[in-house]
Amino acid sequence: MTVKVNGKEEVLEKEISLLQFLQSKNIDLDVVVVEYNYDIVQRDKWGEITLKEGDNLEVLQFVGGG
Amino acid sequence: MTDKLIIGGKEITNRFFTGTGKHANNAIIPQLVNESGIEVITVALRRVDLTSPQENILNYIPKRCILLPNTSGARNAEEAVRIAKLARACGCGNWVKIEVISDNKYLLPDNYETAKATEMLVKEGFVVLPYVSPDLMVAKDLENAGAAAVMPLGAPIGTNRGLQTRELIRILIDEINLPIIVDAGIGRPSEAAEAMEMGAAAVLANTAVATARDPVTMAKAFSMAVEAGRKAYLAGLGPVKVEAEASSPLTGFLD
Image 1: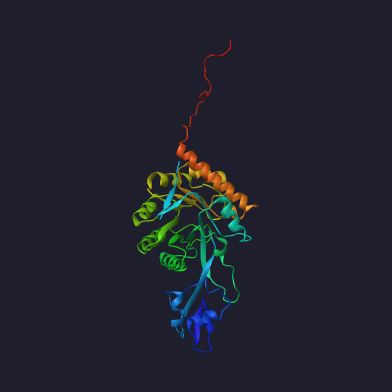
Image 2: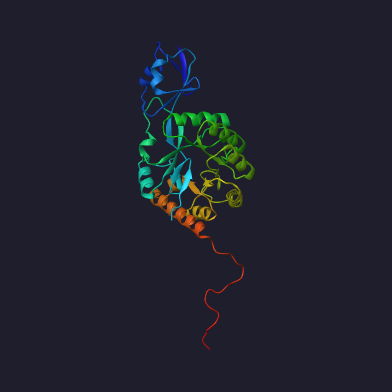
């Protein structure tokens, strides 16, 4: 199954939740904000979403800016 | 004398705002913010690199600060609204600096799209500070739409060229019943002071601080200049004259 994450396609071996997917990455989950198919998902709901073919994810955080 | 700037229901004492971009070392940010007593500070929102952990910029911003996320990267109103909502979801407040830019050479804001985004975000309950080219008609639209302030540029972003738009900003200060915060292009503390003498409510400078040889001292210089300019504005500048007018009495001279 292929999903798009931050503009790049990624192949997932098996069905996993959004939370499991994020936990598999080398990121600080406390500081990111996640958009799932163009809707913001609050962090307490990450475990309730199962990723499916063609999903679009954006994972963002604050950075330096003016 | 108390002279507080109130935006979105919050009292702001230090009228110098800064940004967190372009710093060679983020560790300098808390130092310059604390030593200058800076209260309002901008950040941007970007995609996370999923392969390597990134520094969390929030770790460098003192908790007492008001966070002003920008919508940089937005090319139209819809994108600005999307970024603003994501920023708010980060849980650091509901302020947003709208930045809608599609001109890559001069990074001039798209006033029309910015006005549209302002209207939408005010309805969503944001405290909206739109970054615009100083245009009176657009500023009136922003005021009617419920913006919390108007942020006209002094010169293109990152240029350090100063108050090139002086006259247009003067008109905004005169005609718009909102805080006018000069943002972008201010390169020197003297230029920040001049904007404040004209009656600007605050000045935001990022590049001028971040690219100074000593950003901590430069932030302090800007804070002091902004405070001096504000005091001068409140004191009321003396009249400008073409011909000399003696300051000493013109009688009682020695023979």
